[in-house]
Length: 126
Image (tube, rainbow, N blue to C red; front, side):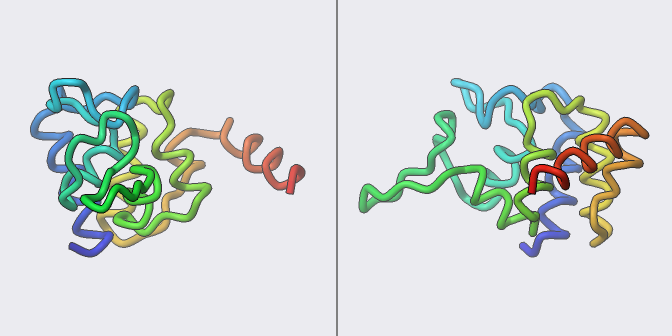
């Protein structure tokens, strides 16, 4: 799956089964609820990702955050914002809609006017 297809698959999962989406964890202990990053990684074959790590058969580990960001074609800033535990479900869906169309996420539209201040502050830190 390419990033656009991955975004559409995650979006479909959340829309068809909203009870399976919760931004608070990569994966619930029972494996039925995941955040956006958790669903993206899961749809690419990652299993047992509750801890935020994928453990390979050789013992190596990779962060689910990084796997999901790659699967969705996200910059680090977009991954941080989209995978935030405090991101409301409606905003996650709105952001995924951009990605599913092959577009860059318009965070001002997703989060509203207050997001412009966050971008300004982020730019000042760099």
